[in-house]
Amino acid sequence: MVVTIEYVLKNEKGEIIDSSEKNGKLTYLHGFRNIVEGLEEALEGKKVGDFFSVSVPPEKGYGLRDENMVFTLPRENFKDDENSKVEPGMEFEVTIKDVIYILTVVEVSGDKVKVDANYPLAGKPLYFEGKVTNIRISYSDELAQGYPIKE
Image (cartoon, rainbow, N blue to C red; front, side, top):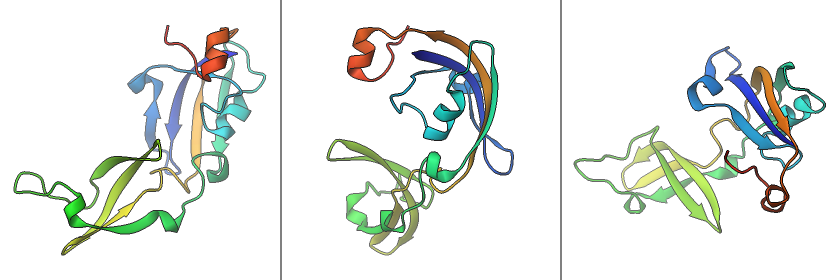
C-alpha cells in the first residue's frame, strides 16, 4: 500500500525537527522500509483519518551512534579558502560505494579535520505525531522500484 501522512517529528526536548507543514505530506510504500522502522510499525493497520503518536527508540529510528564513523581527514580534502572556511558544524555530502553520507565537521585543528559520518539523528529517540491522510493500492512499477511514484 502507498500511505500518505501528515506528521510532526520532535526531539526529546519537544522541539520540532521536521513536519509536513514545513516539507509537505510524507508518502511512502508501506513494507519497503522507506521510513524509519518504528514509525512504520506504528502505522501498521491504520486507516485514513487515524491519528498516531509514537516514541521511536534509536534502534528503530536512525540507529545507534557508531564512534567508528567519527574520523579525521586531511584538510586538503576540503575546499578551504578566504571565502569559505571549514568550520565545526559544516556539512559535506560524499558518496562512497553508491551510498550517500553527510559528514559533519566536528573539529578543525591545523591540517586535520575531524568529521562525524553518523546520521545527525542517530542515537536519538524520535517522537512522531500525525494523521493518516491517504492509503491506496500500490502500482506494479512502484513495487518493482521500491518507492511510490510522485503524484
